[in-house]
Length: 224
Image: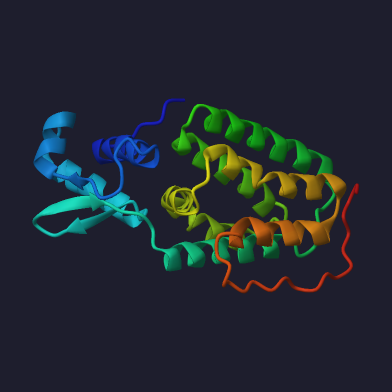
């Protein structure tokens, strides 16, 4: 089934792709009139698209003047990472459940997709695969409200990854490789290692951050 999107959504998606892939670099001014002419849409459509990009932390809007491509601040990036870390940690509170082998397969497939995106230098596609990878972990608990809270942060992941890749000076394949320890821990059925790998994954770029890992408790790990 084809996805039907509005004009602002289509324009926002096109601009998002360019920004994430650095085709429109940081500090670039985005002028409504120029973009409206390029896409063949109204300036109102451009304004609607800009608001969605602002919510994702990809641009800043200067009222009645222009918009500018930005990078998420260090403080905001740390907040988003810690929130995701805490929620994913909570999803594993009762262990892997009975389907660990299927969990490993799903994580490996998402990681393969991330690798393809990295090799083609497509951060937009990498973000989508990264979201799928972590969503698999979030589904372990089966807690719907926990998943809802986690999903609320999804729109900011593109801005977060673009900012952190730039700030840390790493390549897209480096970002992919930072998921391998998580996959290995799940494959080994080692819940304590998985907790530590998640902490490292999310907090590695924030050396001053404190993210204590709760003490392990006995848990059922299913077919581990």
